[in-house]
Length: 137
Image 1 (cartoon, rainbow, N blue to C red):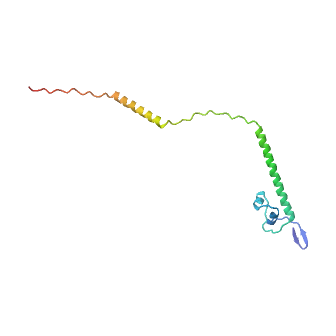
Image 2 (image 1 turned 60 degrees about the horizontal axis):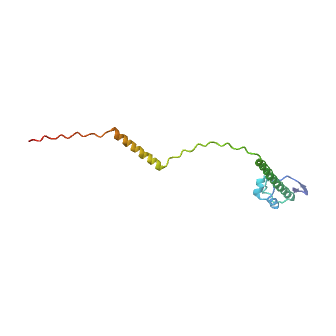
Image 3 (image 1 turned 120 degrees about the vertical axis):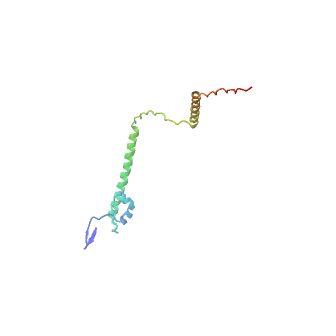
């Protein structure tokens, strides 16, 4: 409301004052989250604005409670529905690296086999019989 020359006119304001928020016990951050516009230039506290703020808060609280009830109903319905069983996939066994000891044994065996093959391929050369020197008599 504005006063000019003994005439009171009701005029829409740009937002609620900080004093009105304090009277309605509303935090500034909460007001911003609710979408309530603030007018920092105003310093007046109007009773009808305070009542309007309180009504907005009550409606917001009731709406939150209703949403919680709706969510509980929906989750209850979902739990009641039978969920289809998941198809189990056949999982191939993972390839496991051989243990260190087993690898060492395999390497030693292969080394023995290789040595045996080499020994078979190259027979030892027979030395020629030594010639006896003729003795002079």
